[in-house]
Amino acid sequence: MDTKYIFVTGGVVSSLGKGIISASIGKLLQARGYKVTIQKFDPYINIDPGTLNPYEHGECYVTEDGFETDLDLGHYERFTGIHTTRHNSITTGRIYKTVIDRERHGDYLGKTIQVVPHITDEIKRRMLREDEQDEELDFVITEVGGTIGDIESAPFMEAIRQLRWQLGRDAVCVHLTYVPYLKAADELKTKPTQHSVKELQGMGIQPDILVLRTERHLSDAIRLKVASFCNVDLECVVQSEDMSSIYEVPVSMQRQGLDAAIMRKIGIPVGETPAMKPWHEFLEKQRNATKEVHIGLVGKYDLQDAYKSIRESLNLAGIYNDVKARIHFVNSEELTTENVATQLDGMAGIVICPGFGSRGIEGKIIAAEYGRTHDVPTFGICLGMQMMVIEFARNVLGYKDANSAEMDAQTPHNVIDMMEEQKSITQMGGTMRLGAYDCELREGSRAAEAYQDPCGKTARHTTIRERHRHRYEFNNQYKKEYEQAGMQCVGINPAADLVEIVEIPEKRWYIGTQFHPEYSSTVLHPHPLFVSFIKACF
Ligand code: GLN
Image (tube, rainbow, N blue to C red; front, side, top):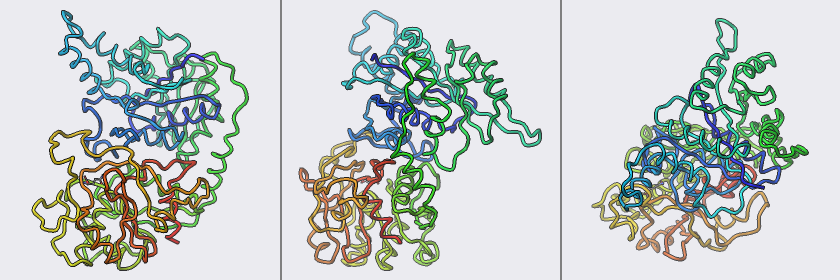
């Protein structure tokens, strides 16, 4: 089968959950046995979201191949289990950079370089994944960030318009809009959807399928109205009602025939509806997991999306333990030795979050101390692990001034230091230790035990591969002292001899990882460390 292309755009407002819809479409087509990839095109000028503040854009998600990407790629991976790469996250900045570099190289000698056709051609090439060494793909799903009508997304829309013309039935446009409910009138309003579709049509794109986001159930009459005003078949107007969990969305979309509608539009036989048994089993587990386990998430960003993958990993790990992980954000900037006991009171477990810079780190150190001295299961991730290490140096090894070179370049006890290969780097963006690296686990350690997989789904591992995003590392000069005092370095990167995991074995669960396990936790394969952490919490 020739590769088919699905474009997902959004209108009316942002935050409608285009990423979830794209991931759901991917999941449903994958369940039908198709080879799928999902990619995100973002209209901002940054080369990648790596340099963006999480307040602006939520978490930065890191792929196996070490690219800093949009958090929607996390949804794609969690839903489908298919790894994304640097080719799945494209920004306007990257498109322009490629074109400008080519211009300087003389590739267009004599020509005026313009948005149309040069920028749009480059967008098209990337949408078609012309340079990629993909295995044969049946479907490429392309989600475009932003909202229809944004000035900056116009070249993407033009590229889609041209591709639809070029590809004919091999391309399908899915447009996501919002149907607001007006309380005073007690009515659901379709006008914003009509306007949004008109805007799209004005750019020469007729959507094939409309997904209507709504807080209330839409009657057939409303769907019919939208269908007839927007030139879309009734069966191609589906609704995406608020759900108790985002993982219910694929099932709801399947029930309404979204995947079947896409296949019909393309002209491939629809066949039987896949049962998606493992997915349904997961949902069943999720519905039954009502007993709550309270987890304190110690970080500096009071924003849901800033720690998206960690939150989802905890949720998933809870479900596989038949409990509901109730996550309480604890602002590390407000944590003090005086209030830590009340702030963390009732928490069955503590997660110390990743991050950069010194804001809020003392609170993270206080949380690490509290977890260690009160023997509350504690999980430190990246900066969180580094703070566990600093806390141990200050309060157990007696180095009161211990710090990370990131926070205090002059500290005489730099238990966390800059990695050698990072010292000469001055450029920002994509220059950290990024992506998946091997890690050897010490036999018999708590971490190794966790990787035996508490779900019993995979075989025992002694060498694992996990994703990274950092510049600083555990300073090996102190390794012996730590181990003698009870903090063990139980995960080591063999190539560079970097400490990847520390733990205090005599505690109930006190583990810090220099890598980010949250990036590789998926719905059907929750990360073993998270599963083991939650298990220790009750
Ligand atoms: N700032 C720390 C470093 O660069 C930790 C990074 C992180 O938590 N992702 O090493």
